[in-house]
Image (tube, rainbow, N blue to C red; front, side, top):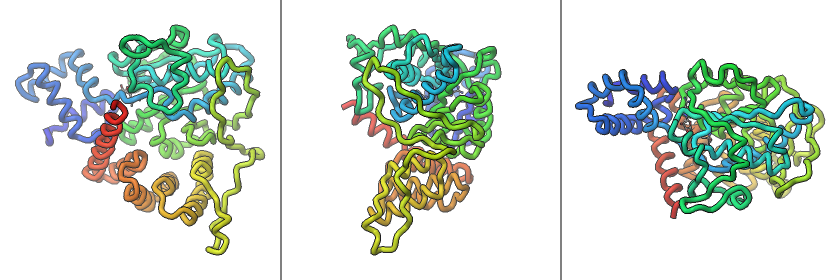
Length: 419
Ligand SMILES: C[S@@+](CC[C@H](N)C(=O)[O-])C[C@H]1O[C@@H](n2cnc3c(N)ncnc32)[C@H](O)[C@@H]1O
């Protein structure tokens, strides 16, 4: 199959999957598996079957998708959502409920996390609706069932499970009042008819999908998402996808680690008073980005001569804040200061990689990602970004090696979590 590009092309055209992103061996394995399961005599016969059978097409898609997800994945995102949702509700003056899209929603953990975060913030159920869309009917059916095992609860703060789930024999069943906030449907982001006739969404979550697409498809999907998103709304993406949006004229919302973007021309969101809460408040937010006078971010230390080094106390959180606010040069200075003070550090090198990547210096970005990986060989974001850089430079073998390494480390982490 190494030299049979038909299946790669089929998956790329049909669902956007880029062979370089998941690696050819993964797709080849899935095709061989489906070929055997379908009873086709060989790959040629399987190719013929695939052209004729919608059910087989869906089965192949199920075999290659990565449905990996969990509740409150990147918790800062949900804090940021609460803030922008509150501000938007003030703007809307209760004219209509907030509209939120989770695409892809996989098995439902993401849209239900959105619902729980908003309910926790005291936003009443009547004030928001969430649509969840995914290409996988199996995942959507699981989301509809609303019963989850241990693997869906991975964070350190699982108090939401006590508030919103009942323990049942095969896991935890989500309460009906959360489930009814979310409308689920099967859909393909590449389908021009998807969500036709739907009003724009205030907030669009498209996390951990673009990483599986090549650059052309990413840009195409980005235009689709922009079309779904109200011009004053925000787009939430995954950590490995930020550099792409920065290149496409979006600016970060400015909440550290939230991976939320708005159109470059949108004014920053003013903080609004938090309503009385029915449940514990979300964790405090890092300061927002401001074109008007900013709330005090700790000053960015300048690189000091050795004698003054004791005074330098920049933190990784500050670096993340600056990077997410789009203050690239200050963030890079802060990384230098951090490294001077603390010595070699994988996370600081990763930030330097990302900041150079966003700045268009692929060579330097590559060097820094490699340094991060030298110190922390399984650093997931450094692996993902370096793989994307190599793939963009045509080094598909190097990219594949990194993806396989990332997949191995994900599997190890997964089995450790299950223990
Ligand atoms: C890694 S999960 C991400 C789920 C969730 N957004 C998150 O970040 O936790 C990726 C999902 O994308 C879905 N997917 C892949 N290609 C798609 C497409 N073309 N249209 C819609 N969903 C797609 C897969 O079925 C899978 O559930």
